Length: 132
Image (tube, rainbow, N blue to C red; front, side, top):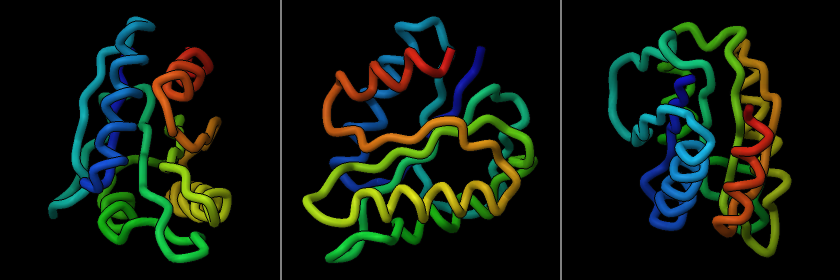
């Protein structure tokens, strides 16, 4: 099975995306990492799973990185696709940012079946186990 991990270029998020990729690969997924920054369409048709990650943005959270929000709108054929939303944790606002990210994915028609704040490789392994 194939997974796409679309993520923000913020350094903590890059580490979380790499940990998730490694965990998915250990569960026999073929994984492609893609930075959210850029332009042009993103083809998600070949993927069974799309994971989207953003840092928790704002002093009290509740927002996602602008580059991630833009990338979600550039995804072709996201409707009906299984997705995972993930963020990096902060003392405040992590849950709000997760809800915002999930809302953006659902607005494009995706099926968000899991979500998590990834703060460690154990968190990434847990979400990869549930992705089977």
